[in-house]
Image (cartoon, rainbow, N blue to C red):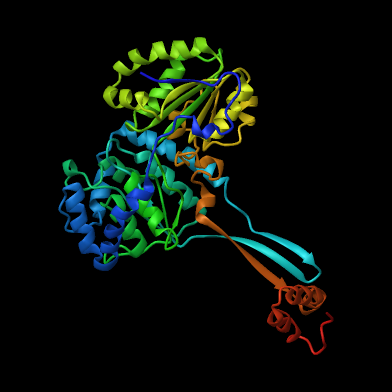
Length: 435
């Protein structure tokens, strides 16, 4: 059901070449989404409606979801689901509120200061995927940090569903209602990103687009990056588990399965020092998979080249492997898990010990589940309040402070053969700035 890679002994120089990883050819998808985005750019709302009919099989009079549909979705929401969403929102707000930045003023010289101001972007388009699953949790994870950052204008897009009259799933609409978001569009895929980027008669353009999606969403984000800011190009979801002989194989198997449930190209990777644990997990997987609703999807994901069990000699090598893999989600199920977790450098989010599974982070830990995939955790972060903020330096110098800096500025301007830079300094004084 799942392959095995034996890296005991010496590790290869470039671990990325041997570790399992899902392949996602965003570059190839670019040429397919380019005409879609250009169509939306030139024809606006009419193009969005036609593309929605073509790709989703839904005829829309308007992409904007009526306010009464959002209200009704909340009124009809299962009370247990509402309570869970409210608690998820509460916990996410606690964590993200503490991420707020404060302005910092530094006195460089007497009369000369530099202040770093943190300013939210003006308007954000938040994408919530549809397809194989329903993701009201992604509404929470997108909206809460944007709101806590102080973004003044938010819009949500999610694919229309035939079975719900061409609207996004009602649980997604209910989550929007709980968060006070009333601007929602029944649009998915590349056309949703293009609608946000260029604007239409129905939707004003945004400054930034965030949120996970399929390859077409990722390709559109890459294509339109620059016109809009983006959080990341989200790829297939992934989990890595670093475990030793102390880990419970039932827990490990369950956690690998939980990520494989997302998609046939989801990645589930176990890195372990223990052959006995590897054997026990392999033995545990078939029974647990057979008992799940999405067993076919999970079986395909676990058997794919993106999933596997990696054997290593010791925890030191295990840390090297998981740092090279840079997982979206990384669980540490070892002796002294907290100390081991503290040594990890590359991961979207780290889950410590047997009682912090990834599924907790998906819904209720308070952390954000919109995280870098495909190894991007070695250079990128997950969604946070910081995603929606820009640092602006405010320079405030008096005449005396500028006079003190003038000789240095002029010397460097001359060294770079940019004499007009020095002249801009000299123009402010009735004396010659010494070279």
